[in-house]
Length: 147
Image 1: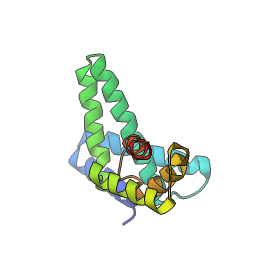
Image 2: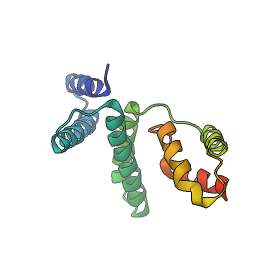
Image 3: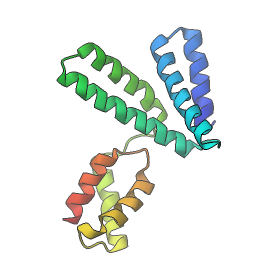
């Protein structure tokens, strides 16, 4: 089953279960997918949908962080609940050790020497770990490995 079909089924399930939080979050995801499809006039692949889900999770993490700093725990809890719902659609996340191993293998493979090769390494790492790791964390690991 495609990711888009799974999202549509989850909307139906949430409607039947009268689960307002899940329904609202999954509908928001569906709307974001439809918006991109309309804007680009094409059917999105699972990889494209994963990119949208990853972006939405990152936005919610940033918002939750801001709400925590502003001591708005009610809004922070709402954002964290949405993250949990959205993470269902992401593949299992890689550990820091796994990401480090992938980065090291790509550095050896590309014969990267220093920071000037960071873009080349990041491009290959991003293709390999798409949706499975936080790219900010990956960037830090690559930077540490190349310096």
